[in-house]
Length: 114
Length: 111
Image (cartoon, rainbow over all chains, first blue to last red; front, side, top):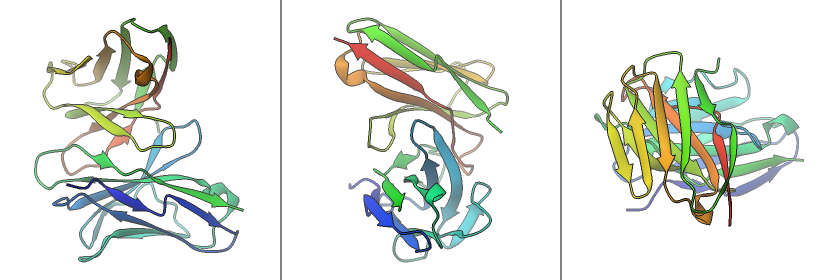
């Protein structure tokens, strides 16, 4: 059973470009979470999605950021018109449906905006 | 705002020593999770706690879910160099809630 897969592992974008980060959850998992981590800091919640639904986006910046988890395919975190302050590690986690609340993380995508 | 506090913020210990770290919250949570993050990697789940008062072990790791549901501790016995990393506590109110992370405890082990 493969773990949570994130790609790319490293992404370099120029200011003003778009960044697309992909996350394939573990098999059988229907809940996906995105977190951002700055160097030497903890994990900040961004958004929680189930298939085709956004459950909680209270941590998402109001502009330029969006997330989706379509019926088929990976979850996508999209950052439009990136700025230097978007440089960070972005982690995706997934959890199964039902009462098991553990969340399992991918290895992250390190975004660098130059 | 920040709902979880972890102490200590960092620790430097000799190999073979036991380690204890703590996590407290201002609110009640029904699930407490402990993760370890190595540099450049994603967090790895160590222990999950579901019941107040529950004590759970995973090898040299032991964690307890506080009876008030507002705190948890993690102990590591006989530390080894590969225990180095950042340890995060995390909480959830329900299985359909986001996971909230603490700021982390950085552990360094001196051989």
